[in-house]
Amino acid sequence: MTGAIDILCYFFSHEAIQKYWYDCEELYRVVLWWQMQDRVQGRSLDEFVALLDEAGVEKVLIPATKMMSYKTKKMLWDISPDEVLAVVQSKPDRFVGMAGFNPYSGMAGVQEVEHAVRTLGFRGVHLHTYGFGLELDHRKYYPLYAKCVELGVPVVMQVGHSAEHMPSALGRPILVDTIALDFPDLNIVGAHTGWPWTDEMIALAWKHENVYIGIDAHHPRYLDPSLLRFMKSRGRTKVLWGTNYPVVAHASANYMREHLGLSPEVQDLILRENARKLFGL
Image (cartoon, rainbow, N blue to C red; front, side, top):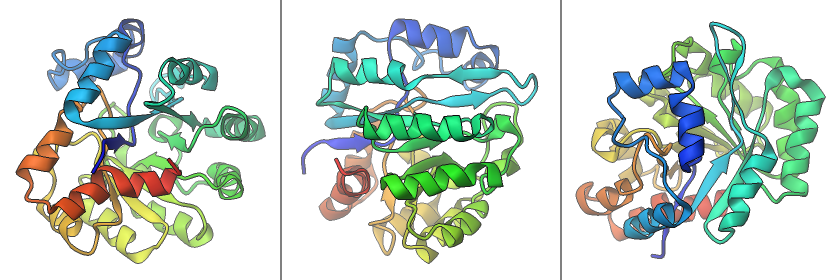
């Protein structure tokens, strides 16, 4: 197999790490609580690419994340497509853009997504619903879902708990069931494994042809046994590797290869081929 594909990787520069993690009080609380200071560090372009090379990672998908504070109703992260494009253009053979979406932006937000995909070449859309106070199957998301079907791009939506102080139930995996039923042509990636409702996420990925599981944000050593069994058997084509960098380092790809007992075929599918097909890379 050639290099792995990371389906969810945030900005890595010194300036971005400072702005989006250390200067953002709600995210900095997570850094401290989870003792991630050693991982949440800025890197130069050359340093970051060297880390990818060491881990055998070919490409990373970088989202224009829209994240609202549940407490203050102010945007914590409001990253524009142009900010992501600038990073992608610094190394276009390694970086791929994803649009973000604010459900309160209405059709203007849908048009921004369309521009990002049609004009800028982005390959998907990322959702972080918790701070907006809306369930993933809320009607405010439906214009986006319809547009993504039209554009032929997947939606990567965080499911499971929220590390920030936001209501986790808004991203419970079972909500994906309704979306998949209403939009059978929309490819959906439930990111972050769906924990602590991982079995719900597994059930939906097995039920729906258009539902997949992202194992980003969880180091492979901590994957639920039921998810690992799914990966090794009937779910081998329904699971995609990622990091949620800087939460998990890209060296986790090597851990996947060396310590989980995955066959070469399953490694190739989960680390690369499933993402390559889904995002058209």
